[in-house]
Each structure stands twice: as structure tokens, then as C-alpha cells.
Length: 374
Image (cartoon, rainbow, N blue to C red; front, side, top):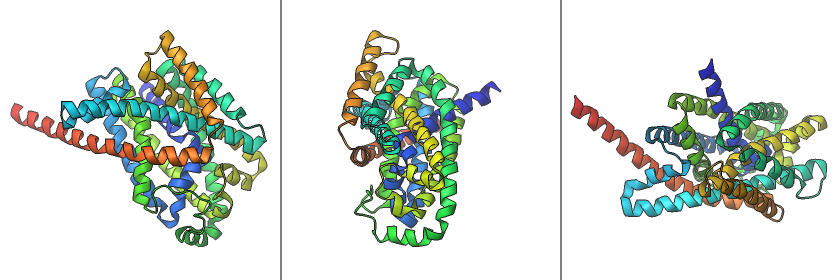
């Protein structure tokens, strides 16, 4: 029973981390997947493959090497090209990923600000300030506290997303064929941003790339501190819910593409199609989803420069949260997602190239050792 509970905790944490502002608001689902119309499934297939492989690798190598800080996993992968190049690449990815995760935290603040303003008409910045206060309070408790918080919220969020997207997918079915054609010919390209420049594979690679940089340090450190089979089972279960939900969301969004293409928060548009009360509840769920991603993102950025429990860690958490909140209040949310996620996603995909080579060499080396013993 304890093992099953731990699997569910890790699965819930992975779901919570992945969802975030972009997924919960469905803005990133629009830009990466639904914007490809009838080819959205290609994007999802590419992202799912990257998510499963890279996270299995992070957890496995983190566990095998007993790493003490998640960011150390980059040294492992980058070392495949020799000590000199490997050292330079490791330093780059270690610092860059920490910065990227921190800037992704800024995106979460922007998502909270847009959600609260669009749904309740509150002044710009109120949502970001409220989110920042909650995130700082959670990150101060460290990794164990983060896992406990995320594992409880994630399943609730994904269920609510599935409910809203499933209902609106059904109501949008009469328009799905016509709307897919409209998206395919670029009818909404002037109001709907698209990552990948028309290539669903490139979009999937970019999407998967930024997921790599999100999960690298997080899952490597979880893998190092828990039973490997438990971590991997939890992650695989999370993938079923995440990409199943993404598929349903795409169908719902395309079915109502005339309403959601230009919206900051497409999820609220869909929820309002069902009921204003559902929309009110879903706005809260979006904020919860934003919170669950913002916490580990800020933690990853702070963890790079400070050890948990130290005064430096606490100061960096508080200052980092405040600065990120200020940035989010002055930079448009949609612009943050499109530029930040798109550019950094491709760099994450470069890291996966290193990972494939490292894992292949490690596997071959392991087989050779077994052969010599025999």
C-alpha cells in the first residue's frame, strides 16, 4: 500500500509540474498542438515520446549515480564528448536550465495575472502577486514539501481539465471537420500564434525540449532519493493522463476555434460555453495548475545557487519570487510563452541528442561488462 501511495504521489507531482500556466489555460495547447489542425496528433506523439524517454533517463541516471543536486545530471550527459567540451557544455546547460526554469516561473506569474484579470476583472498584477506569495511560502519548505503539495493538487486539476474539454469536445463535434480545414489552410494564422513554422514535428520537438529542461533536475533528484521503479511507474502513469488530456483539449479547441484562437485564456472560453459557474470554478483550477508548476520552477532556479535550508536559500527564494512577479506584470503573457518556450525548447532538444549518445554508450558498456564476466 505504501508503494502504491508513493507511485501516486510521484505521478501527481509530475502531472502538477507539467500542467502549469500554459497547459491549464490551454494557451500552449493552442500554440503547439491545436494550431496544426488535423495534424495535432503528430505533435502530441512527438512530445509524448520525448517526455517518456527523457524522464526515464533522468530518473534512472540520477538514481544510478546518486547525484546530490539535480543539475549535476547535465555533467553526466555532456561528458560524452570529452572532458574539455563536456565541461563547457555542462556549465552552459546547468546555468541555462536554471535560468530557463526561473523565466518559466515568470510565465506562470503572467498566466495567473491574465487569468484573474480576464475572469474576475481585477487589476493587472493582482493574480501574479497572490501566486508569488503562495509559491515563495511553499518553496521555503524544500523538495519534500513541494512533492507533498503537488501530489494532492495535480489529480484534481487534470480531472477538471478532462471534464471541461470532454464536454466542449462533444459540443464542438458538428464544427470539427470545417474548423480543421480552416486551421489547416491558415485562416486563423493572423490571430493564433504557432510554434514550429508549419512543421508539427518541429513544434513537438520544441514543446518536448522545454519539458526536458523543466524535468531534468527535478526528476534526477527525485530518482536519486527514491526507489527507481516507483519513480518510473509514477512518471509513466502521469504520461497517460497528460497526453490523453492534451488530445481531448485539442479536439475541444478546434471545435470552437473561432472563439479561442485569439483568446489569452482559451480554457475559460470553453468553460463559459458550459456554464458561467463552471467558468468560475475552472478559473480557480487554472490558478491551482499555475501554482503547481510555478513552485518547482522557482525551486529549480534557486536550488542552483543555494542549498536547501540555508539563509541564502531563503533569501534567494524571496527575492527571486518578487523579481519574477515584477517582470510578469510588465511583459505580455502570450508573448512570453511564444518566445521563451519556442527558443528554449530547441536547446532542450539538443540536450536530448547528448542523452541518446550517453545512454547508448552506457548500455553498450554494461553489455560488454556482462559479457566479460560470463
